[in-house]
Length: 134
Image 1 (cartoon, rainbow, N blue to C red):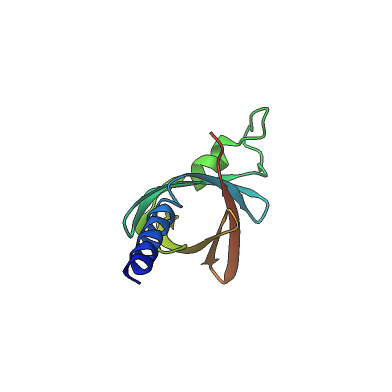
Image 2 (image 1 turned 45 degrees about the horizontal axis):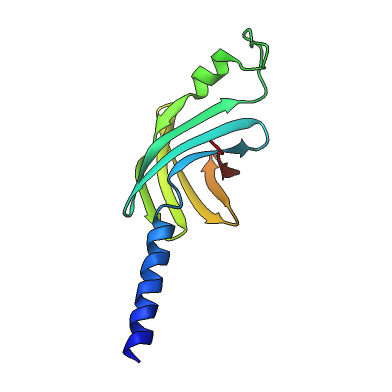
């Protein structure tokens, strides 16, 4: 009985350690099919830190380069530091800023995808990201 209990505790410990690193790394995806979203995440226990980068995938002029990248729009949306980041199992939450105002995100990791949700104004927004292959 003690061996079974010890084995179960060891197994759950290994699983918890593996899940703790689930979010570390570079994640890429799209918001509404129009915006490229990149998250560079780092976990430390239940703390989540990193960078949030949003680039308009549908340039509105302002001299986009040959790949369609618009420096004006990219600078406008830009990169933000993730603050107040938390990890709880397969769930994360964090805050970024847009035009000087906080934007709150919640995410869940399932089926090799990270799905983020937020409310921007009165609109619910969803983004699906996958771990970038290096």
